[in-house]
Amino acid sequence: MRAAIMYGAGDVRVEDRPDPTIVQPTDTVVRTVLSCVCGSDLWPYKSMPATDTGRPMGHEFLGIVEETGSDVTHIKVGDLVVTPFTYCDNTCDYCKKGLQSSCRHGGRYGWDGVDGGQGEAVRVPQSDGTLVKLPVDADSELLPSLLALSDVMGTGHHGAVTAGVRPGDRVLVIGDGAVGLSAVLAAKRLGAEQIILMGRHTDRTDLGREFGATDVVAERGNEGIARVRELTGGDGADRIIEAVGSRQTLDTAFGAIIDGGTISRLGVPQYMEGPVGADMIMRNITLTGGVSPARAYIEELLPDVLSGVINPGRVFDQTVVLDEVPQAYKDMNDRRVLKALIRL
Image 1: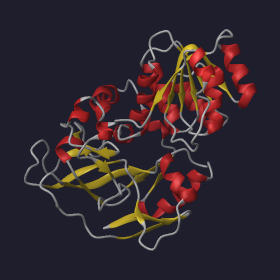
Image 2 (image 1 turned 90 degrees about the vertical axis):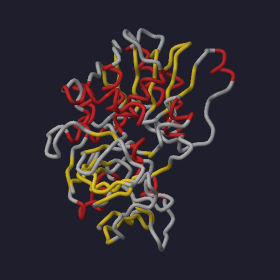
Image 3 (image 1 turned 120 degrees about the vertical axis):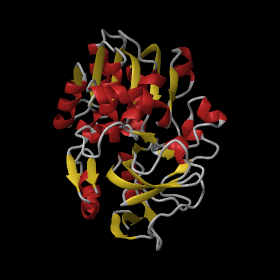
Image 4 (image 1 turned 135 degrees about the vertical axis):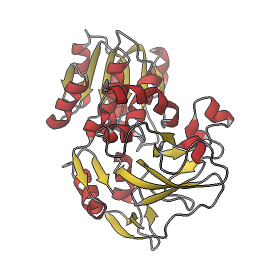
Protein backbone atom coordinates (compact mmCIF):
# COMPACT_ATOMS: atom_id res chain seq x y z
CA MET A 1 0.00 0.00 0.00
CA ARG A 2 0.93 3.69 -0.22
CA ALA A 3 1.21 5.83 2.89
CA ALA A 4 2.62 9.14 4.14
CA ILE A 5 5.85 8.86 6.15
CA MET A 6 7.66 11.69 7.96
CA TYR A 7 11.46 11.46 7.93
CA GLY A 8 12.16 14.72 9.71
CA ALA A 9 11.16 18.35 9.93
CA GLY A 10 9.64 19.41 6.61
CA ASP A 11 10.25 15.97 5.07
CA VAL A 12 7.04 14.06 4.37
CA ARG A 13 7.07 11.41 1.64
CA VAL A 14 4.43 9.13 0.16
CA GLU A 15 5.88 5.69 -0.43
CA ASP A 16 5.16 1.98 -0.55
CA ARG A 17 4.64 0.19 2.77
CA PRO A 18 3.73 -3.41 3.61
CA ASP A 19 0.02 -4.11 3.38
CA PRO A 20 -1.50 -4.36 6.88
CA THR A 21 -2.44 -7.83 8.09
CA ILE A 22 -4.12 -9.28 11.16
CA VAL A 23 -1.51 -9.63 13.92
CA GLN A 24 -3.70 -10.05 17.01
CA PRO A 25 -7.17 -11.64 17.12
CA THR A 26 -8.63 -8.27 18.17
CA ASP A 27 -7.29 -6.52 15.03
CA THR A 28 -9.22 -5.28 12.02
CA VAL A 29 -7.88 -4.13 8.65
CA VAL A 30 -9.65 -1.01 7.38
CA ARG A 31 -9.37 0.33 3.83
CA THR A 32 -9.18 4.09 4.20
CA VAL A 33 -11.80 6.25 2.50
CA LEU A 34 -11.06 9.61 4.13
CA SER A 35 -8.18 10.86 6.24
CA CYS A 36 -6.74 14.29 7.00
CA VAL A 37 -3.77 16.25 8.30
CA CYS A 38 -4.06 17.35 11.93
CA GLY A 39 -2.73 20.56 13.44
CA SER A 40 -0.79 18.41 15.91
CA ASP A 41 1.01 16.81 12.93
CA LEU A 42 2.61 20.20 12.35
CA TRP A 43 4.62 20.08 15.59
CA PRO A 44 6.88 17.22 14.36
CA TYR A 45 6.76 18.77 10.88
CA LYS A 46 8.49 21.80 12.40
CA SER A 47 10.89 20.05 14.77
CA MET A 48 11.30 16.28 14.20
CA PRO A 49 14.96 15.20 14.02
CA ALA A 50 15.93 13.49 10.77
CA THR A 51 15.64 9.69 10.78
CA ASP A 52 16.44 6.89 8.36
CA THR A 53 13.33 4.85 9.11
CA GLY A 54 10.62 7.49 9.19
CA ARG A 55 7.33 7.56 11.06
CA PRO A 56 3.92 6.67 9.60
CA MET A 57 1.66 9.72 9.90
CA GLY A 58 -2.01 10.33 10.56
CA HIS A 59 -4.45 9.41 13.30
CA GLU A 60 -7.84 10.49 11.91
CA PHE A 61 -9.58 8.30 9.35
CA LEU A 62 -12.71 6.46 8.38
CA GLY A 63 -13.02 3.56 6.01
CA ILE A 64 -14.42 0.16 5.11
CA VAL A 65 -13.62 -3.01 7.05
CA GLU A 66 -11.76 -5.51 4.85
CA GLU A 67 -10.71 -8.18 7.36
CA THR A 68 -11.34 -8.96 11.01
CA GLY A 69 -9.51 -10.98 13.63
CA SER A 70 -11.04 -14.07 15.20
CA ASP A 71 -12.06 -12.24 18.40
CA VAL A 72 -13.82 -9.34 16.66
CA THR A 73 -17.59 -9.55 17.10
CA HIS A 74 -19.04 -6.02 16.95
CA ILE A 75 -18.11 -5.12 13.38
CA LYS A 76 -17.95 -7.09 10.15
CA VAL A 77 -16.38 -6.98 6.71
CA GLY A 78 -18.00 -4.26 4.61
CA ASP A 79 -18.92 -1.95 7.50
CA LEU A 80 -18.11 1.74 7.15
CA VAL A 81 -16.39 2.75 10.39
CA VAL A 82 -14.74 5.74 12.04
CA THR A 83 -11.95 5.59 14.61
CA PRO A 84 -11.04 7.92 17.46
CA PHE A 85 -7.48 9.18 17.16
CA THR A 86 -6.24 6.65 19.75
CA TYR A 87 -7.29 3.01 19.86
CA CYS A 88 -8.73 1.43 23.01
CA ASP A 89 -10.47 -1.69 24.27
CA ASN A 90 -13.37 0.42 25.67
CA THR A 91 -13.74 -2.06 28.55
CA CYS A 92 -10.88 -1.37 31.00
CA ASP A 93 -11.37 0.68 34.15
CA TYR A 94 -10.12 3.87 32.52
CA CYS A 95 -12.39 3.40 29.51
CA LYS A 96 -15.39 2.79 31.75
CA LYS A 97 -14.68 6.18 33.37
CA GLY A 98 -14.75 7.84 29.96
CA LEU A 99 -10.97 8.18 29.76
CA GLN A 100 -10.30 6.04 26.72
CA SER A 101 -7.19 8.08 25.97
CA SER A 102 -5.61 6.33 28.98
CA CYS A 103 -6.81 2.82 28.06
CA ARG A 104 -4.62 0.13 29.63
CA HIS A 105 -4.49 -1.73 26.31
CA GLY A 106 -4.65 1.25 23.98
CA GLY A 107 -2.15 3.21 21.97
CA ARG A 108 -1.48 5.66 19.17
CA TYR A 109 -1.55 5.25 15.42
CA GLY A 110 1.85 5.46 13.78
CA TRP A 111 3.70 4.01 16.78
CA ASP A 112 4.76 0.55 18.00
CA GLY A 113 4.25 -1.12 14.62
CA VAL A 114 0.76 0.27 14.07
CA ASP A 115 -0.04 2.00 10.76
CA GLY A 116 -0.73 5.69 10.48
CA GLY A 117 -4.05 6.94 9.18
CA GLN A 118 -2.62 8.78 6.16
CA GLY A 119 -2.39 5.67 4.02
CA GLU A 120 -4.48 3.36 1.90
CA ALA A 121 -5.17 0.89 4.73
CA VAL A 122 -4.70 0.59 8.50
CA ARG A 123 -4.45 -2.25 10.99
CA VAL A 124 -6.64 -1.19 13.91
CA PRO A 125 -5.80 -2.88 17.24
CA GLN A 126 -8.55 -3.40 19.84
CA SER A 127 -11.01 -2.80 17.04
CA ASP A 128 -14.18 -3.93 18.83
CA GLY A 129 -13.66 -1.16 21.38
CA THR A 130 -12.20 1.37 18.99
CA LEU A 131 -14.27 1.42 15.82
CA VAL A 132 -17.77 2.88 15.54
CA LYS A 133 -20.00 1.73 12.69
CA LEU A 134 -21.47 4.57 10.63
CA PRO A 135 -25.08 4.25 9.37
CA VAL A 136 -24.38 5.93 6.01
CA ASP A 137 -22.97 4.88 2.66
CA ALA A 138 -19.36 5.48 1.67
CA ASP A 139 -20.41 8.22 -0.76
CA SER A 140 -22.46 10.19 1.79
CA GLU A 141 -21.98 13.96 1.79
CA LEU A 142 -21.78 13.71 5.60
CA LEU A 143 -18.43 11.88 5.52
CA PRO A 144 -16.22 14.96 6.21
CA SER A 145 -18.27 15.82 9.31
CA LEU A 146 -18.22 12.19 10.43
CA LEU A 147 -14.44 12.18 10.00
CA ALA A 148 -14.28 15.24 12.26
CA LEU A 149 -15.57 13.01 15.09
CA SER A 150 -12.27 11.13 14.88
CA ASP A 151 -10.46 14.01 16.57
CA VAL A 152 -11.13 17.67 15.95
CA MET A 153 -14.83 17.85 16.91
CA GLY A 154 -14.34 15.51 19.86
CA THR A 155 -11.40 17.62 21.01
CA GLY A 156 -13.34 20.87 20.76
CA HIS A 157 -16.21 19.23 22.65
CA HIS A 158 -13.79 17.99 25.31
CA GLY A 159 -12.65 21.57 25.85
CA ALA A 160 -16.23 22.75 26.32
CA VAL A 161 -17.09 19.84 28.63
CA THR A 162 -14.00 20.16 30.85
CA ALA A 163 -14.46 23.94 31.00
CA GLY A 164 -17.97 23.26 32.29
CA VAL A 165 -19.83 25.23 29.63
CA ARG A 166 -23.48 25.66 30.59
CA PRO A 167 -26.45 27.55 29.16
CA GLY A 168 -25.98 31.28 29.63
CA ASP A 169 -22.19 31.19 30.01
CA ARG A 170 -19.78 33.72 28.53
CA VAL A 171 -17.11 31.65 26.75
CA LEU A 172 -13.79 32.71 25.26
CA VAL A 173 -12.15 30.43 22.69
CA ILE A 174 -8.48 31.26 22.08
CA GLY A 175 -7.29 30.10 18.67
CA ASP A 176 -8.95 30.05 15.26
CA GLY A 177 -7.56 26.70 14.12
CA ALA A 178 -9.78 23.71 13.45
CA VAL A 179 -9.89 22.74 17.14
CA GLY A 180 -10.76 26.28 18.21
CA LEU A 181 -13.54 26.48 15.63
CA SER A 182 -14.84 23.10 16.77
CA ALA A 183 -14.80 24.40 20.36
CA VAL A 184 -16.99 27.30 19.23
CA LEU A 185 -19.42 24.79 17.72
CA ALA A 186 -19.34 22.73 20.92
CA ALA A 187 -19.91 25.74 23.19
CA LYS A 188 -22.87 26.80 21.06
CA ARG A 189 -24.27 23.28 21.21
CA LEU A 190 -24.04 23.33 25.02
CA GLY A 191 -25.95 26.60 25.27
CA ALA A 192 -23.33 29.32 25.80
CA GLU A 193 -24.93 32.75 25.54
CA GLN A 194 -21.82 34.67 24.47
CA ILE A 195 -18.93 33.08 22.57
CA ILE A 196 -15.87 35.22 21.89
CA LEU A 197 -13.42 33.84 19.36
CA MET A 198 -9.86 35.16 19.58
CA GLY A 199 -8.18 34.97 16.17
CA ARG A 200 -6.97 37.15 13.36
CA HIS A 201 -7.50 35.09 10.21
CA THR A 202 -10.69 36.54 8.73
CA ASP A 203 -11.63 33.48 6.68
CA ARG A 204 -11.43 31.37 9.83
CA THR A 205 -13.17 33.80 12.18
CA ASP A 206 -15.96 34.23 9.61
CA LEU A 207 -16.55 30.48 9.83
CA GLY A 208 -16.38 30.83 13.60
CA ARG A 209 -19.23 33.32 13.46
CA GLU A 210 -21.25 30.87 11.40
CA PHE A 211 -20.50 28.19 14.00
CA GLY A 212 -21.85 30.43 16.78
CA ALA A 213 -19.26 33.03 17.80
CA THR A 214 -20.98 36.25 18.85
CA ASP A 215 -17.78 38.31 18.91
CA VAL A 216 -14.30 38.18 17.39
CA VAL A 217 -11.18 39.62 19.02
CA ALA A 218 -8.17 40.06 16.76
CA GLU A 219 -5.97 41.78 19.36
CA ARG A 220 -3.38 39.81 21.32
CA GLY A 221 -1.65 40.16 24.67
CA ASN A 222 -2.84 42.91 27.02
CA GLU A 223 -4.89 44.54 24.28
CA GLY A 224 -6.72 41.29 23.66
CA ILE A 225 -7.34 40.78 27.38
CA ALA A 226 -8.73 44.31 27.70
CA ARG A 227 -11.05 43.75 24.74
CA VAL A 228 -12.40 40.49 26.17
CA ARG A 229 -13.04 42.14 29.52
CA GLU A 230 -14.82 45.01 27.77
CA LEU A 231 -17.06 42.57 25.89
CA THR A 232 -17.90 40.68 29.10
CA GLY A 233 -18.83 43.71 31.18
CA GLY A 234 -15.43 44.12 32.80
CA ASP A 235 -15.14 40.86 34.74
CA GLY A 236 -13.90 38.43 32.07
CA ALA A 237 -15.17 35.19 30.58
CA ASP A 238 -16.78 32.47 32.69
CA ARG A 239 -15.13 29.68 30.69
CA ILE A 240 -12.07 29.78 28.49
CA ILE A 241 -11.00 27.12 25.99
CA GLU A 242 -7.31 27.58 25.11
CA ALA A 243 -6.76 25.83 21.77
CA VAL A 244 -3.25 26.93 20.81
CA GLY A 245 -0.73 25.64 23.36
CA SER A 246 1.67 28.59 23.68
CA ARG A 247 2.71 30.32 26.88
CA GLN A 248 1.34 33.59 25.49
CA THR A 249 -2.14 32.12 25.00
CA LEU A 250 -2.09 30.62 28.50
CA ASP A 251 -1.18 34.04 29.93
CA THR A 252 -4.02 35.55 27.91
CA ALA A 253 -6.43 33.00 29.37
CA PHE A 254 -5.42 33.87 32.94
CA GLY A 255 -5.77 37.56 32.16
CA ALA A 256 -9.22 37.19 30.59
CA ILE A 257 -10.89 34.78 33.07
CA ILE A 258 -13.37 35.89 35.70
CA ASP A 259 -12.62 35.10 39.34
CA GLY A 260 -13.99 31.61 39.97
CA GLY A 261 -13.84 30.77 36.26
CA THR A 262 -12.45 27.71 34.48
CA ILE A 263 -9.73 27.46 31.84
CA SER A 264 -9.50 24.30 29.72
CA ARG A 265 -6.27 23.66 27.81
CA LEU A 266 -6.62 21.80 24.53
CA GLY A 267 -3.50 22.98 22.71
CA VAL A 268 -0.48 20.71 23.17
CA PRO A 269 1.67 22.85 25.52
CA GLN A 270 4.91 24.13 24.04
CA TYR A 271 6.07 25.33 27.50
CA MET A 272 6.95 23.79 30.86
CA GLU A 273 5.98 26.59 33.27
CA GLY A 274 2.91 28.77 33.62
CA PRO A 275 1.23 31.40 35.86
CA VAL A 276 -0.13 28.93 38.39
CA GLY A 277 1.04 30.62 41.60
CA ALA A 278 -0.69 32.56 44.36
CA ASP A 279 -2.80 34.72 42.04
CA MET A 280 -4.50 31.63 40.61
CA ILE A 281 -5.30 30.41 44.13
CA MET A 282 -6.55 33.77 45.41
CA ARG A 283 -8.84 34.14 42.39
CA ASN A 284 -10.19 30.57 42.65
CA ILE A 285 -9.37 29.81 39.04
CA THR A 286 -9.69 26.20 37.87
CA LEU A 287 -7.18 24.98 35.29
CA THR A 288 -8.22 21.79 33.50
CA GLY A 289 -8.36 20.18 30.06
CA GLY A 290 -6.05 17.68 28.45
CA VAL A 291 -6.07 15.19 25.60
CA SER A 292 -9.56 14.31 24.44
CA PRO A 293 -10.90 10.79 25.03
CA ALA A 294 -12.53 11.05 21.61
CA ARG A 295 -14.06 7.56 21.76
CA ALA A 296 -16.17 8.72 24.71
CA TYR A 297 -17.85 11.41 22.59
CA ILE A 298 -18.42 9.83 19.16
CA GLU A 299 -21.78 8.24 19.92
CA GLU A 300 -22.95 11.37 21.78
CA LEU A 301 -22.13 13.69 18.87
CA LEU A 302 -23.03 11.30 16.03
CA PRO A 303 -26.81 11.96 16.03
CA ASP A 304 -26.27 15.72 15.71
CA VAL A 305 -23.99 15.18 12.71
CA LEU A 306 -26.42 12.78 11.07
CA SER A 307 -29.33 15.21 11.58
CA GLY A 308 -27.36 18.24 10.41
CA VAL A 309 -27.52 20.07 13.76
CA ILE A 310 -23.74 20.45 13.57
CA ASN A 311 -21.52 20.36 10.49
CA PRO A 312 -17.92 20.22 11.76
CA GLY A 313 -16.67 19.02 8.36
CA ARG A 314 -16.71 22.64 7.24
CA VAL A 315 -13.27 23.05 8.86
CA PHE A 316 -11.83 21.18 5.86
CA ASP A 317 -10.93 23.83 3.31
CA GLN A 318 -8.65 21.80 1.05
CA THR A 319 -9.12 18.33 -0.47
CA VAL A 320 -6.12 16.36 -1.72
CA VAL A 321 -5.25 12.88 -2.91
CA LEU A 322 -2.58 10.83 -1.18
CA ASP A 323 0.31 11.91 -3.41
CA GLU A 324 -0.47 15.55 -2.58
CA VAL A 325 -0.12 15.07 1.20
CA PRO A 326 3.44 16.50 1.42
CA GLN A 327 2.20 19.74 -0.16
CA ALA A 328 -0.82 19.74 2.19
CA TYR A 329 1.55 19.71 5.17
CA LYS A 330 3.40 22.68 3.71
CA ASP A 331 0.20 24.56 2.98
CA MET A 332 -1.09 24.05 6.51
CA ASN A 333 2.25 24.94 8.05
CA ASP A 334 2.31 28.15 5.98
CA ARG A 335 -1.29 28.92 7.09
CA ARG A 336 -2.62 28.85 3.57
CA VAL A 337 -4.93 25.98 4.55
CA LEU A 338 -6.90 25.44 7.75
CA LYS A 339 -7.26 21.65 7.55
CA ALA A 340 -6.60 19.35 4.61
CA LEU A 341 -8.94 16.47 3.79
CA ILE A 342 -7.39 13.40 2.12
CA ARG A 343 -9.54 11.32 -0.24
CA LEU A 344 -8.23 7.84 -1.00
